[in-house]
Length: 369
Ligand SMILES: *[C@@H]1O[C@H](CO)[C@@H](O)[C@H](O)[C@H]1NC(C)=O
Ligand SMILES: *[C@@H]1O[C@H](CO)[C@@H](O)[C@H](O)[C@H]1NC(C)=O
Ligand SMILES: *[C@@H]1O[C@H](CO)[C@@H](O)[C@H](O)[C@H]1NC(C)=O
Image (cartoon, rainbow, N blue to C red):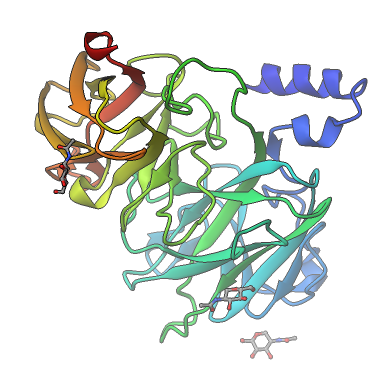
């Protein structure tokens, strides 16, 4: 991944659209440039302008990996610094982007107390989007206590403002999410494709941090009206996990989607269809080789048809090709995938996991051509 970034940056020096081509950390997106000791009181950052490229408000702490709170080690990746947002605290930065371009933001987050925590993320101005959403931190999905979330936005300007705001008033002032590594990726859909579905192989999606093995969560469309999973919507209360072949087994290409929260993680896409015509829907179902074992069942909804596809996961990274045939009832058909059951990793971490869906293809059936 580092090499790819380097190649892109070299290319960028000769291209006019340089900024939108670089995928990776935003300036000081890992907070490694921090405040001077004189700008702090204990771990609290006193000077709101002491972290380069960021502006702080309220009770924000600058935390080093290995730092403890009571008898708990705060979950900051090794050799790193991170920021913790106290009650009603916020951090903001300006991002240089290309107007009219679609982007996804990815960031690492950990919650530190048992309480339900929420984070208000906003990126404005956003074309045709409300520009903000409340991300629920109650269900953490990874084993490490650290997760990556993503967020899609459609830049309405060459500069947008990103704000992370922790709205809660907790009893314990030291509760509140820890944020680290903020990265940006520009996204686009291939213009020409013979398939009726867009991005059926899920290759075009949010940035995944190359040194993490928990992928990136794609939030519900209730929160993020511009899905960073191009072409698809997360039509459920909970997120889906976007995974990469560097850290997981995926059935096809480099990326796939793991349905991590049972019936509460749904991906969907609306496609143009001809009423009365028969269509073939083809896809892979598998497991990511991530300790997610057991009898799985995928439910697929297309037009008036519901299909149940069983998959027996041995957590070895297996997969199978599925072919379904349905008749379109309308000129628009919603195709939806969900996992019937909830699954947890067999490492007793309690982390949610589930079946993987990949390489979804839709063609009009030759049967009734
Ligand atoms: C540092 O924080 C402590 C505890 O919150 C507070 O009592 C003290 O006044 C602060 N010191 C300065 C210089 O702001
Ligand atoms: C979240 O933040 C945005 C922008 O900062 C604000 O407009 C919105 O009202 C906030 N939402 C809630 C529920 O606090
Ligand atoms: C689909 O369902 C609707 C309403 O339930 C029905 O009117 C229609 O005939 C069905 N279409 C097909 C193609 O089965």
